[in-house]
Length: 398
Image (cartoon, rainbow, N blue to C red; front, side):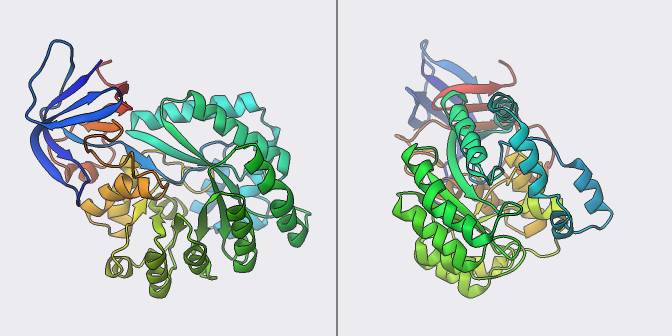
């Protein structure tokens, strides 16, 4: 059935800038955006009254760790008492804690937990979500996580992009031997079994060195993976330059990236992805050099980094607000970052991330009458409808 979203107060097309179109309607048919304009109702249309609403592309969350076992509220309490994240990690907490619980969980348990989280994500307007492995570390648990992510991909109402994340070195394993295992065994296995679209690596002082990261990503590239990199979160060890040299689709975190790093990424077409929820959750003092990003005219994406240790925020509406409040993004930059540039950070802007005839009908209808209220009314439950491929997957009135 065709759907007519009628008389929207504002439509954010994201074609150029926000591309605001006022007091128009959108016709969706066969999962595609067919027309935008002054459109008449027909008997065969399902009608959705969008008066007083803003319609924007469905949110694209291009960086999450949505599949995991256990929880880490005890660490959250410790951080509030002043214990640093790195100190907790060295004491066996942090990633190691989640690794232990993820290893113990069955595939069905991980799937059910992931399914519940995706239902919550949908209620907040996300229509595309990247999900990383990385809490397995050892081969069989990594493969288990990726099987769960692919099971969710087949059954979830949203589009899921699976990523194989090389997160950190397992306890009691020599670094050089682990890197060799990743390159010689894990990357080939994931590639042959088609378990992931991207390979990602954590390049920072508490994870992998620049050299190790480049070795891992180069091997992944040879196996046909698209590339991502976690870098410049705690220390600048050259990860952004690795991203530029290898042509990563995105580089994520970037709290301590320098101007030359940002310029190099721009020249190589790397999409910088900022994760403000993590900075707020970890109470980090630093923030990205927004002036350098703007000077380079970077296509800045923003994402949730939803994970059990450093950001339990899955709502992209809240991430948009935090991007403005914590990092100083303009309202327009944050909205573009959560839609258009989020799609670019996954290499899928050819079909999602903007509202244009011929593109996939991924939309969110927000119960506010102008786009500036989206971050301004921080914390409000403002999603009226979430639409994926022309199908309503969440509606307050359904």
